[in-house]
Length: 196
Image (tube, rainbow, N blue to C red; front, top):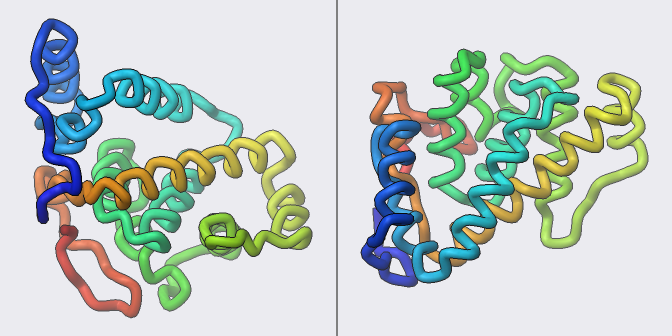
């Protein structure tokens, strides 16, 4: 991992102790990003709170949302989000062969047409000028229903929010995938590599 663009602050005080304890319990480590965001605790708490709420939404399939978030992370280059979502997919019992292939989903033969539609939609939403089409949305609505597409769209929006924030601050992979002894992720173009 390279140095972040803003040096991490020391996470102190009662609130800091609680955050570190919670992170250790949930993740087995305190993410390096916590120290960066600690400079503005309202932002840290707001982003964490929103992330927790996003995880509770249940109108759309978890695996589809996971693939969408990883497709965004891969498209915009956020190694932290790709690594963390790989770790989360493992912990939630999702299809790890597919998760490993998300960065090269176009070349992989593992994905269903629906999964491909979801990742294409995630990438289209992630462009500097979004390239979402009426056909993309109507195709997803036909397959998933309106509630699931609204949720999927919000998850992709949140993924762009978090990935782009991490990239701008220079926050990179913390090695979550390595912590649970998972094989390296594929990168676009099929070149195996570790995260980071």
